[in-house]
Length: 387
Ligand SMILES: Cc1cc2nc3c(=O)[nH]c(=O)nc-3n(C[C@H](O)[C@H](O)[C@H](O)COP(=O)(O)OP(=O)(O)OC[C@H]3O[C@@H](n4cnc5c(N)ncnc54)[C@H](O)[C@@H]3O)c2cc1C
Image 1: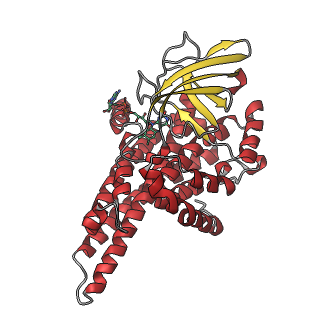
Image 2: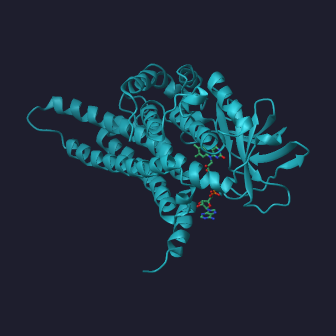
Image 3: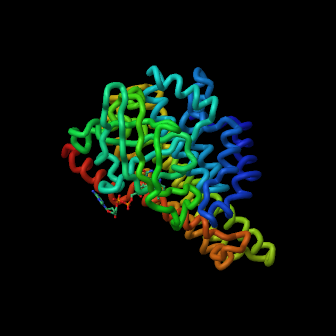
């Protein structure tokens, strides 16, 4: 697996320290878009980090994108989440459409203008069921119209473009879906809900009615079911898990500094919390190990460019298990770190505060509800042949 080159690692930490960390509390307190942080990432050219070099992008691979997510997660969970969500949309285009007319030029434009892409899969009436849509594409000649009631679109107002799911046409069943790209100016957002949530407050995931009209060439030609299984699912579960690992690692680092400070008070005996530090570090290692394994498998599948490999149940189950376990481990790790830091971790006004970390941590299980994913996995497991 390729690691992020050292200069990019250092650059990510520098942006994290100098920009994300500086604004993270304000972003969280006011539930506002992390504009300064996203501007810094745009300036670095990282919104096109996954775009191949032929198109002018950085040409990073998935493990390298995941490493950036992890590093950013140390400094501001919301920025890291926005970065990850954007990269997932970019990956859908790069994997499935980079050779097709409109999208060739779109990728170049994305590189030049560092365009930020939001996503609307969740819909009023189907909730988080990614494989169902109520709204439908209505085609008229070489143009289409769409209206979608979306209860949550992260950074919808601050994005340049929007990718949404819809039924292929008004007569199509709810699972016959397409992925549609709408550019700035081609869609309107009527706000129907605000985002005053427990965590990931900077994602500003307000609710909207989206209405749009655009040329039909912006309907992504690959069926959404394939985009989901081959890219959106695995890419999301790996990048999300990575940024959750970053948040968790920052919590462990605070706990480490706390124990170190305590240890200086009594040089004869390490504080009791030192044992807990050892314990929480093993859980963090498990989280990282799980991510590494799935990432290696998925990157190999991307490199081999074998669409059939994705029809195997095993990979789908493993990638779902990764999401479920990562979203549980982040809560466990941050909770353990808080136990170590005690009241200093529980306070909002302490250098060891873990309040934002714990609030963000609880969002992980809801980003496509774990129960939905588990039911899906259970169905797949029951379909396995008995030996
Ligand atoms: C920080 C954050 C950012 C987000 N950003 C976006 C975004 O940018 N774009 C977007 O489209 N969405 C976004 N979402 C939405 C998210 O991905 C989920 O789709 C959404 O949170 C689902 O909401 P829900 O859990 O209330 O609904 P549901 O998934 O409908 O679940 C509600 C409850 O019903 C249960 N349930 C219902 N049906 C089933 C079933 N068939 N099987 C098992 N259980 C079932 C669930 O377990 C759960 O208990 C975001 C969510 C978060 C937390």
